[in-house]
Length: 272
Image (cartoon, rainbow, N blue to C red):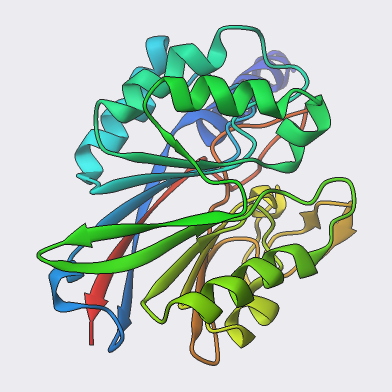
């Protein structure tokens, strides 16, 4: 009887430690994306994707996140939305963005939670003032070794959730240029439309990996919420288009990850 009573708190402690570890320890994963359309000068180019932080602090002064990024040796850091949400305290952006830009050039797009806050213009202005590039339905040219690729960023469509907005951006870019095109889009369901517009690579987040991940599933709970969502984590292919979806780094609204550690994708571009 005494042994059984002792096992109950021990099991509770073990479950608590497992949940803490599974919601705070960063998992870095590399994805090699090969394309004959990629210029030779960008072979080996590394993009670290930071997504869905929701105001989380991964270590004092974001130390654990910044150390993980430093180990990833990125040429570019892509922040794909939901850096902040309605619960995020003031000063968060100014506390994390300088650390990111000290490691590599940073490009940022809004997510639905920045839009939901209603102060996305202020947030975007603050991020830009700290040295990051804010992409709001526009694109830039990245240059390396005398060659270039295109990097676009779509503003999140909250509250309409209209995929045609990012599709229109892709169509506009393709009418102007034909280079290798990477598009940052917060929502994780845009690949079919964007691949049809000739986007070579999409980087997305939003789904938090489906929150609970079990063998042979793509996550159990998606935004909405919906059961058994698609496109929640890792690499996907459709026609000539590819997509890498981050499981995100933070939580929101009391949601807890199960078998779904915070995710830091590192995309390595390859010519081939």
